[in-house]
Length: 263
Ligand code: URA
Image (cartoon, rainbow, N blue to C red; front, side, top):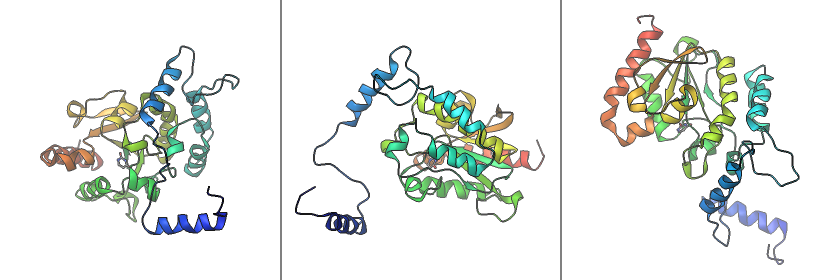
């Protein structure tokens, strides 16, 4: 910091910039994060190195998936799970995100929607699916009488993501990040106790079903963690390809029929 600028002046300047709408801090010298990421990947790919942040030679290796499993299993309520996830140190995505995005809607709802990862709006607001894709998601489920703000459990949905932190530049989460956060998702589902899961998009299908290829998977019931899963197109895809809304509507009707006991 410029020596002529004390802490209070620096803070006032920062607050002024935030008021003007600045949302991201940019350094004086550009950083090529793709190169940084490539270096990290080479390090992690070395045999015998467990998933997790790259550490110095003297730091003990960590099995991040095992730590995630033990942390998730010891959470006995959704609030405890949120706290455990917030304290989990091994996922690199946490460093770049503003906050943990845990869930929205009503725990105990019959239907739980599992999305991919927060985007910019979700990272700012701390809730899943609050951007444009989220508004479309809300309209889709409203069409079958369900909403995240419903007062009654029968009309409610519960929403969470595979990853609770926004990936940089909204890139696809890596397999290692998904594997590391999967025990938390499994526990999240067990604690929220939905009857049916809806997996929106490929990342969610990969996490829940171990398969990608949403165009082939959508519309057919599958199973994950002992629950029926309906894979559906992601609403962000539907915004780009409105013609696919016809299939999404068919899938919603199928979900509705199952909830009403007609299939
Ligand atoms: N897309 C997702 O998959 N999840 C969100 O929370 C927002 C956008």
